[in-house]
Image (cartoon, rainbow over all chains, first blue to last red; front, side, top):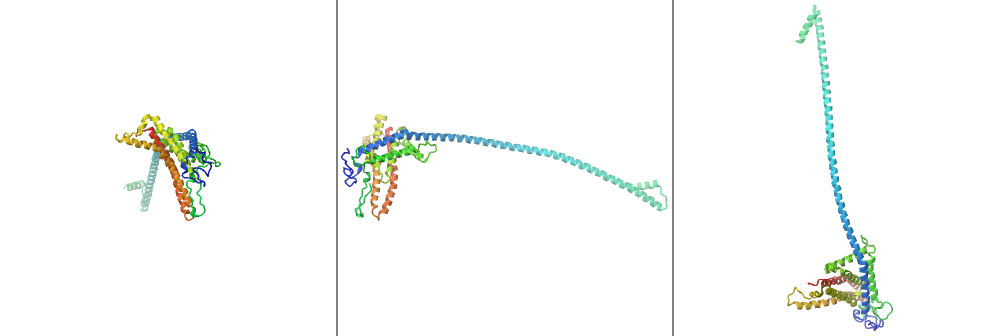
Length: 182
Length: 251
């Protein structure tokens, strides 16, 4: 079919100057050539795609989808675990708080009893000291009274003597005692 | 392939279609069906591109993908989802076939955007074969899977009885026009874009217009990048739609 095309510059489709006559698309001399190479190209591409490329890409896509599904499942699991861990942590924290409160209460009570005991002891000591002091004061008072009595007797004797009388010791004492009572 | 200007401004010569000429890679001999031509070269480059992206790019089979592997996986997911959503779950058996079409078209389109490249998908020979392959596949699958029920595709049971024969004729015509529109849409878009870029490039020979020309080429190039992907996408999604008709012919 293409035999009449004898060269580049002569033929039904290409002019003598090397440019196209009309539309090269409609030059049917070239159709067998184009169709042959097109069919060959399509067959080659079809085999490359259906034998190598497409199964490979589809396998990669399936694998990726599988990996993503697995990863999402794993993430879900880890999330669940994290939740559980958080709950456990919360529980431990609450327990620890309760324990701390209990220990604090106990310590407080202990300190209170100790304090009460010390207070009682201190109170008793204070009472004892007070009593002792009071006893000493009473003693001092009694001593003072006796001294007053003695001085009064002596003074009375001396006064009587100075008045020229003779004082009977017993009488003076009685008089002084009577005075002091009055 | 480049647009030639012979001397002055007055002799501007545009050869926007020269970029589509099929040439032998070696020598100037005649082009037989087996002759290695620039078609061969650019189709081979498309194959190499597909292999680099989908085979070499995924060679590590990494769970956490590299950039190339990401792109390969994106392309896979994009087409797989398209087949599943548009054509239905029972069409995933056709996924390698549809993926082949998409990867070839997208790589051929983008390779065609390389300056001085030959755009294989801008040729009707290529797109007609692609579209006819889809048409034949869909028709054969439709009859094999559904038997005569496949003809229900043309018999719109939801329409009034009187209208049905007319609709059947319209449906039948539209069914057979499918491969034509399917192929011309892809080749036409690419051919037009590339030809327009060449025409703009021709104007760059005039010093006064050349800045505007360069700007226009840049804009067209950006548009062509979009067109390259969109046309590959459209071709693929239409294949899925036709396949859906074959698998579930009831309206």
